[in-house]
Image 1 (tube, one colour):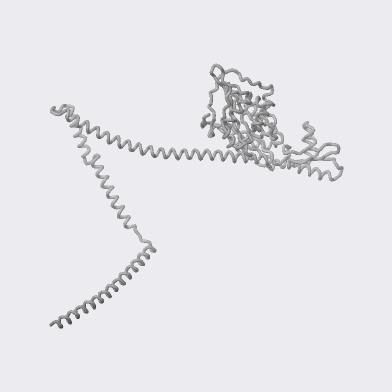
Image 2: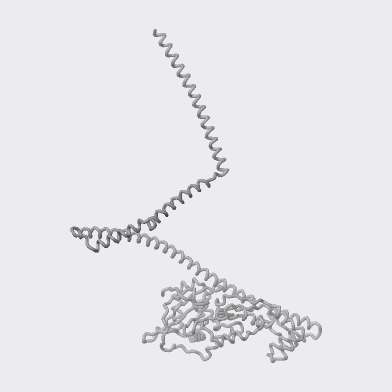
Length: 502
């Protein structure tokens, strides 16, 4: 399988990511996919994730549920605040009796009634200690953990972070997937590192093909591999089905996901290290409208309305609640991971741009060289043509066309030599350039200054040179005196010898 660059599913605009590893086959009509689809195929769209955002199916044996558009899709953290003053005011009505009135005005479940009793009027001890117990239950509800005792012979209320009074809540934004069902994109989460997945990619494709029944008409293609938090890796795949008549089509995401959700298939996937699967399909406008208009359980309507107002791109983003510090940490880790991937991609693009700039510089230099060579060859060809024409016309009289050409050339020559025409202007420009060069040289000489420290060093050096020359002169003078004494001694010896001989 060849590695190609292309659009990666799950990115904001399906751009700027790594492309598929397998060859992409254009979808066309063909025989129906042979896998059976359970009757409740739509249950995987929301399922266990309905109370915490919106996901696309439950995981393979995973104890946690998805809280966004899938792992890694919600990289935009547009928090509206953990607790606003309006929310505090709204939740502070517990001691004023308005809380009980709101529960009496509308029918609520036993869970909400028990929660109201535990927070406002517990009757466990029958004295002033019940007021202290009510404050303790309120503190546990705000924190999102613990048990609220409120009545004898009645089980306590379990406080979780999803309860409406938990303070550790915020709202972020996630991208709305734009993949259609016929694209067949399935996201598989592996509890392995990205390097291990890439090193065993061929074996992984073969194993998934065996899970699909090993049909010869089916081909598993890897669209992309991305690193996730906690040393997990997301692998996006799609399956192509070929018909006997030669056409092919992608298997729908919903049908493929339903097949993976079967119990025995899920067990086989777990043996491969798959911890979760999601069908990357777009939501209908009706589903998006319902999710936006109806705040999820435990989310304050005021915060939800403020999140819809603060949505930076309502056409592409949807509010997603973040409950608890664990979810906030997960989104921060996902954002950090996506930032690293974007930076890595930018580094690759920067290297490509630098290489292209080097190639452009080399190409421009070669183009200039080829232009000069072309000009030289053109002049040589012109000289050959001139000599050939002279030999061919040798002995013939001047023709009328040649006479007209001579007249035109003389006219052009006279125009060029005219004082106000091109040659005169060129001479004037040349003289101005020479004057500018001369004035520039003069100005550069006038602006020449010697630094004071450098001048001091020059004086010191010249002084040392002068002292050395003086010392050398004194040595020469001493040597000169010695030479005179030697000459005088030689002359005296010569006179003595001459007198003795006479």
